[in-house]
Length: 222
Image (cartoon, rainbow, N blue to C red; front, side, top):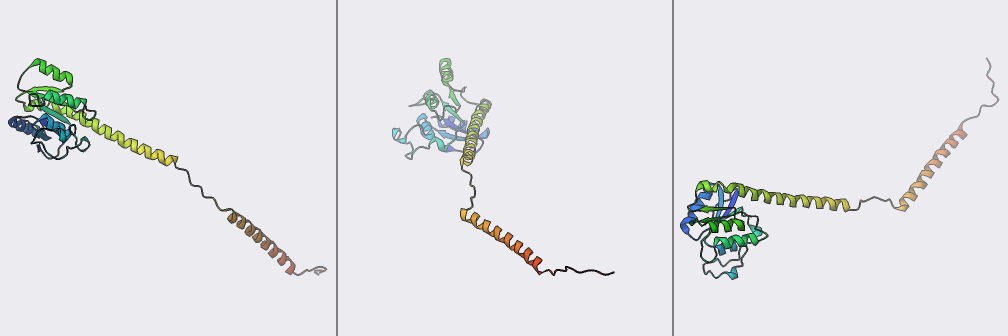
């Protein structure tokens, strides 16, 4: 299994021929794609997480548990039609039967130009059917298919983020408002204080009036 450095699109290439596998890998890398290559349909399913490792009868299959579909993102699958064990058509059917991967574009390659085979693959959901040897010009047709998948994935992620924000806002609105209520004894204490202040002010006025001298019966002579 070969894997290139991260780039814009991730393509899973499936072919039992090492020469054809290397050729398609180089062409895809020239198109600025990240490429993962496997040599059989069963290993492709295992990589996608659609096949448990204990189901494999291939002694060369990796013993580690398969990568689950939550951990990878594939934008396109390109597979040879004629392969031992599982054909490209069988792989196409398994992918299209999967709820997690049915939206991924699948392209079939074959060195044999058999119209009935081509029609069957296209009817099953294949986006393209290329005759070998695949050329760089053929791969330019793949970009629109990969872009559609990538945009759909980004749209789904954006929708999930929007839903998370909306749920958070709804939770905040449903939280009860906190109203500060003064204890009753504080209100009662404030009222006597006000009454005492008024009483003191009145007593000061009365006291002032009493202390003033009286000038009754005084006549001013001119």
